[in-house]
Structures are given as structure tokens and as C-alpha cells.
Image 1: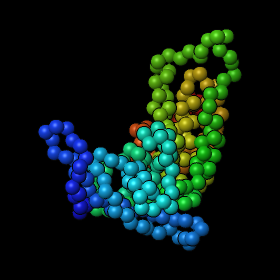
Image 2: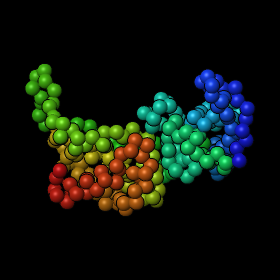
Image 3: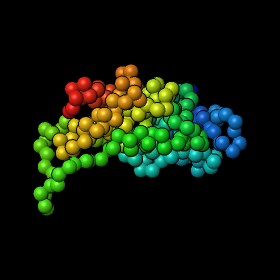
Image 4: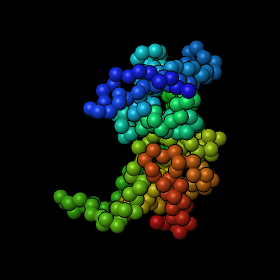
Length: 255
């Protein structure tokens, strides 16, 4: 079990001090300059229940091993840069609280799967971003709004694609997909989600173009509906449902 450490962390008057724990993190390390294969390295870190896995990585890097490499930016679940596998599940390190993990056992941390490993917890995001760009994830309109006016849209039309506007391009969904693991050509859930966002936008005029792109042999038909992507999404997007809606639009011949 994780060892309890006496704590001097302040607590509200009349309440007991918050206890800290010695938590073991086992991190899959890889330095291409010295390692032939990845290796697991363990670290003991003093943690508080309300701290996050990202805090643990900071403590390791700052206090124990400055060579540990990982990505992070906003640290508040918006940028999506710190997606990684924590105890075998894709999560954002900045959104994963220590109190939500079983600290009686070591916490395993490794890079997301399916993308080329560059170093430690950092993967090459280019294949992921190439698929994203291929679906033309931007508004395409063949008309111009009235001068000085915005493109108007009803609340009902906006609600049609509201869920898929939440994507932060963390790659947690795509790198949880077993089809993507075995076939690097598959567009993947995140690209399809971002296509969905514009396919069903009433202001956009290129839905047919995107549907044609995703009707490719490496498009939506590669999805096996395992729901891994939906379970992995840190933003709660119903990814599998979005993919199914794109499939239905292709069969209908339009949105």
C-alpha cells in the first residue's frame, strides 16, 4: 500500500490536516539515443489526494529526473497536449486525480498507442493531424453573408453539431481505437468527429465533399463500433454516435 506521510498542509479550522501519501509511479521510458526498446522505470512521489498525475510528472521531472519528457501546456483540460495511458486507459494527465486511482498499487503511465513514439511520453502527432486536415475541418461556403452581418443560424441548427464542437484534438479517442493501432491509414475517430462538426453545420456548403472523403476504404466503414473512442474522450463527446451519423448521411446521399 502507499505509505501515509505526516503532512503540514493547511486545512480549514477544526479539520484534520490533509494527509499525503507516497505513491509509486511506473513510467515507460524511451530515449531513442540510448535505448533499443522502451523500459519501465519506477519513482516514489509524495502526493496529496487532490493532486493530479500531471503534478506527479512535474515532481519527478523537477525533483528526481530532469530527463523525463512529456507534453503539457494549459494543465486544465483544454489544450489536450498531455493525453497518455494511465493504468491502461487513455486519459489527460491534468484531469486525472490521484484520489480517483487505486494508490495501493503502482500507477502505470505510458505514451498513447498507435502513433510513432518519439521519447518517453511524447508521440509524433503528424499522422493524427494529417488525417484531421484531410477532412477539411473548416467552414466552406459558396456565398457571402450580407455586408456587415454574420451568418445566422437557429438554435436548433446549432444544436445539431454541438457535441462535436468540443473536440480538443488530444488524440485520446483515435489512439484508443484498435483499428487505428493496426492500420495507420484509417482516418480515426477524431478526424471523423471534426468532419461531423461541419457536415451537419447548416452554414457549410461542403458536406458532400467530406462525405465523399469519408466514404473511402479508410474512412468511416473501418469503424467496428467498439466504443473505445467514446469511453476515452475526456470531453464526453459521443464519438461512436457521431461516426454512426456520418455513416447514415453517406447512405442517405447527404446530410
